[in-house]
Amino acid sequence: MKKLFVTIALLLIANVGFAQQNAAFKADVLRYLEVSGQSAAIKSLSKQIATQIPEAKQAAFLVEFDASIKDFLSKTADVYMTEFTPEDMKQILKFYDSPVGKKLTSKSELLLEKGKTVGEEWGKSLQPMMMKYAQ
Image (cartoon, rainbow, N blue to C red; front, side):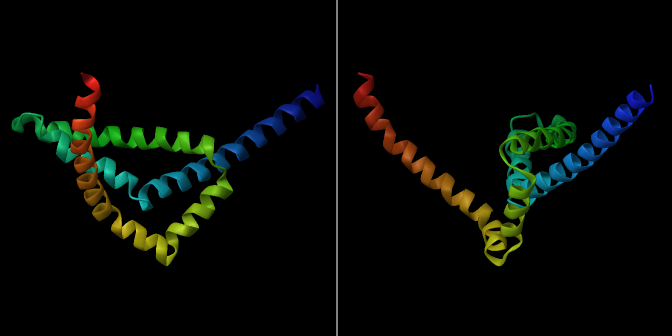
């Protein structure tokens, strides 16, 4: 009986330790999503999506949308946690804390806008090709 109690106690202690490590890992992933600009990109969608909602209901929509972002980012972090180790994430964060990482972050919105322009131009150039093969 004593062995069973000791085994259960050790399992509970190990589980608590793992949960704390997991929480720290998830916090690092969430920080990565923030410093990399991914969180901001998701949040910026709210303005674009809100234009499709009647103006009288936009404020209520934005409150609900903002609340859903937290859950979305949490689930996104879970995905990253399956592909990266805690040490990987520490190295990634180290990069984002470096001068070049900070520069990349500061340019992310500009790059996104310029990238959209390039993507739109490319999409337009595909139309004749698609027409050629659609016939």
